[in-house]
Image 1 (cartoon, rainbow, N blue to C red):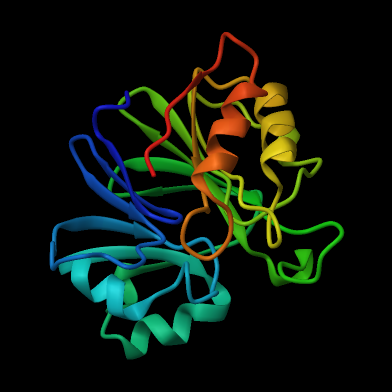
Image 2 (cartoon, rainbow, N blue to C red; image 1 turned 60 degrees about the vertical axis):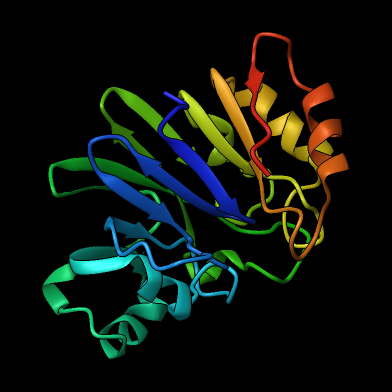
Length: 209
């Protein structure tokens, strides 16, 4: 469940379990060009990075993204058939992979308005439900998430703090949680350590950054 996962930097996640998936590739260190699917949560530069998408994209890579960056993806060279535009709170299937979108937004900050329709994802892969929260606060929608593995931002400023992230994690009770969105722009390794201390003891926390 975890052996196929890497957190490459910040919120950039790679899952390689029968299919190679990248979520929000950012500051990728070399040209891998091995992505079957690229999931983008929203248009901010540390989540939608064209330079890094080109480092992981290969021929026939499909990209999943929100409507505000659809035209950007076309200009980047993706065929229309290889782009899936998503909306919050919907179920999808691509390349026989089922996934759902969860709204990702701020409640008391202006960085990620709900009206932008930005998302997190629940990806169903080989019997495991991976939840990638996106840049979010604790919301009515993400309190109801059911997943096996959760990737939760902890850096604060633009998202939940480590304490709020722990509160959300304890609500949704994944088997495993991986803290993300720290160590590069906001947040520190200390935040990850403090986050882990606040978790219920039956939730395994794996720090990858």
